[in-house]
Image (cartoon, rainbow, N blue to C red):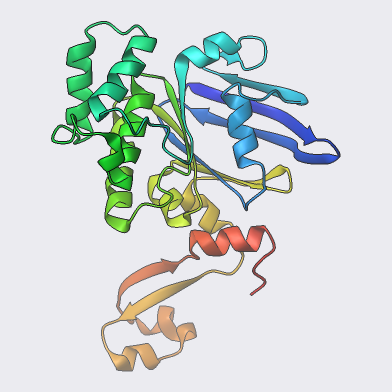
Length: 276
C-alpha cells in the first residue's frame, strides 16, 4: 500500500530532556494508525512535528510526500489537526463556525458544503444555535467537521474522545471509521486502549523515546510469551480426560479459542508496569 506518513529516526529534546530518541514508523494511505504511550512518552511531540508545529532535532519525516521541515506549507495544505480540546468559537453558531473555516480556506460552493457537513455530523437541528449550548459530543463533532473542511488527506486526532460519555464515544468511533472508508488517513493518539483496539489498523507503542512494538492489534497480542488456548468439550466426561490422551482417544472438540491477552496487558507488560 502507498505510504502517506513516513518517520525515520526522529529525535527531539527540550533542554536536557530527550523526549524522542529514535522514532521510526510508516502509515499506509487510507488507514487508521494509533500511537500509544504513557503520559510524557512523546505522543503529542510527535504529532506537533508531523503537523509542522515543532521542528525535530534529528531524523526525517514526511507527510503526503512532503518533508515536514523543508516543505511545511505543502504539508499544512494536505493535513488537519484536532487537539484534545475542541477549538470552536462558543459565541458563534455551528453553521457560523463552519462558514468561518470555509471562508478562510476559500472553499467554493460554501453554503452547500456547510449544509453537507452539518448533515454528515448530525448537527442540522443545532446548526443555528450558539455552540455554548452544545454538549461535549456535539462540540467534538463540530470540531472534527471544521477540521475536515477542505478534505485533508491526513487527519491528526489527539485524544479525540477524552471527556465523552460512552454513547458519544461509540458514535465518534463510527464517525472515524466512516471518514477512513471515504479515503481519509487518520493518525490517532488515545488514552483508551480499547479505542485503539477497535479503531486502529496498526499500532505503535512509544516508550522512553523509542518505538518498542508495532503491528496490528492482533499481532501485538500474539507477541506475548504467555498464551494458551481454551478448549470446549461436548461433555464433562470428555473434559476430565487428560490433554495428553486427546489425539489417541478420538475425543471430539466443539471449538478451540486462542486465549490472547488484552491490548492493555500487552501495553503494560511492554512498558514494564506489569510483571505477572
